Amino acid sequence: MVKISELEQVKKCSGTYVLAVNDTLNVIHGKWKLPIIGSLHFGKKRFKELAREIPKITPRMLSKELKDLEVNGIVTRTVHGTIPVTVEYELTKSGESFNDVLDVMVKWGLQHRKNFMGKR
Image (cartoon, rainbow, N blue to C red; front, side):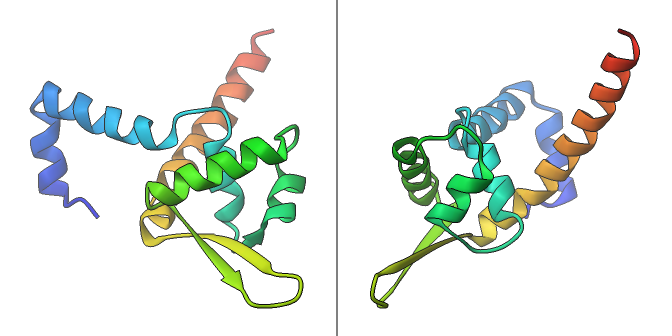
């Protein structure tokens, strides 16, 4: 977790601030990563559970995005030696720390929708 004093220092330097934003975007870029992280926010899930919870994602894309999130240390993949093999995905500590960001995004999205739809 970033200390407040460290965050205040970053806010004083636009270059460092932009670099940190880009680092975040490099990990979560794409259409599907945030919905996957959001789904795993509620606990471990098997592949099929994730596929059912995220409308319109193809199995191929889900597999690709899960691998990418695993490489970036956001998701862990656990293979259980059952027959058939069971694979579960869950957020790492780093992935769990992203929940605060998601909560702020959800709050903003709800307020924006209310304001935007209210003007139409």
